[in-house]
Image (cartoon, rainbow, N blue to C red; front, side):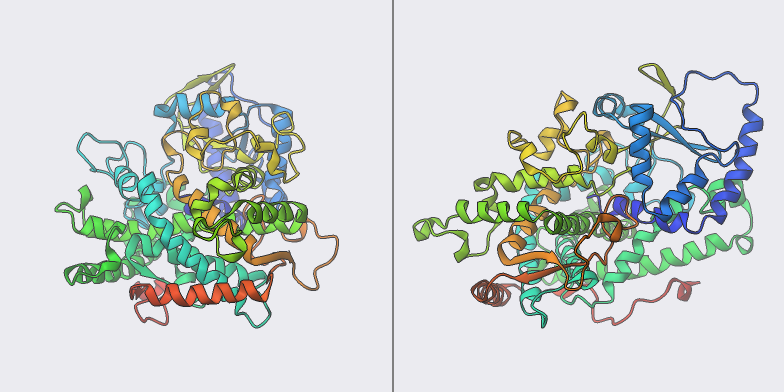
Length: 580
């Protein structure tokens, strides 16, 4: 469930292209902290690249972002400065952890001291009323592991959403929504979707699958107004960055009367809008449960609403906001992973051919005397017969980790790590991109080469928990107590999407794309990942495959229970200003 943290990385570009507040805040607080710390002795801190006296590395960060190469600069510094180094933006120092061994030491072995988050008044308190688990401090009882059963969001999510059993229950939803995605492509007037329209269609099926799993509602139309609304909810992450909000720079301003706090008035209006939207759907879900609606069976909201105590959550408002947050978190990672998969297949056609060959050789219908998968659409259970797909999944999350630079952790106290001291309150990032592109760890790291994992049969969970961190496959899901809990769901979502796209379509550059295509031509705001207008096109492979998709979709749709659409008939979503 990494979709919110993915959003964090995507908005880095938005923040840095409008840096006025960041620079002003950095100057003011940088000077204040410099004066306060003058004359103090410090322990041996990790090294920092050369920087300007007050702004630190902020000018370089802005400059690199314009060319969308910040992750490459951090990778270069990792090779120069070693397993830990600091990057300073004004008074704030972010420490990047660039070694698998150090990730294990800091985030796993010392997880009790590194599971905290920065204090984000705007994002957590104002925009979410402290209901979003991503932003909560580790000491908050809503997040913290408690003695009472399910008395916090973390346990609710683990029990009702992200464990293996629940992940398996979502498989039919993923298979139906990917089938609908295939159908939308094979019936497209141009023989298949391309570019931004293709990206939007991927967003529809990921949002719809998880809206069904969490709320018992779906998104039937790629042009639905609810899709940009959910994407807009991701922008709350913008407010976690230094300098974006004066209240996070100077918390004492919170004592001012409301008419002197325009940032809070606007933020509260956005929260009221989002809460109104989510509560309307939660109340509809409660009415549907009373009428015995089967589409809410085994859903997150259904399980919570049928509990005598809302599974320990504080109120229905918390349940409503958490439902929206879960859709954002789950779907965004799945969408970006699928998009990066298409990039890999476009740029490495020999891997695409190899994967398709293995699917054809390995999949059989047990009731049809070894007929190959060409006679049917693949399903998740086929994964065990196609080891190459597991290799591809591991390689993709290594090659293009969706959250390349991680969501910050905070140290609860001074930590001695090797020769360095990480001070209390230090911001820590797992530099997944640098670890995965370390030539000492992975031969020819820029190459998309699934065979590098041919002897690795571990699941994501097994690899994350390996005692020897050098054997871990990738760091796409973080580490420690704040590691993304949704990897079981992510594995299933990606495998189903990958095998079905390979079975149904040829993946190639869109018509008119230049022959010498390079990543810089379509680099996105998300570090190390492609933009939503990447020039890729899907073309169905044969008329017989097209007919299979159309026939199966018609049959599955007819058998599917009727479901309330997530838009509830609304053609537009109100703007936050309408709630001022």
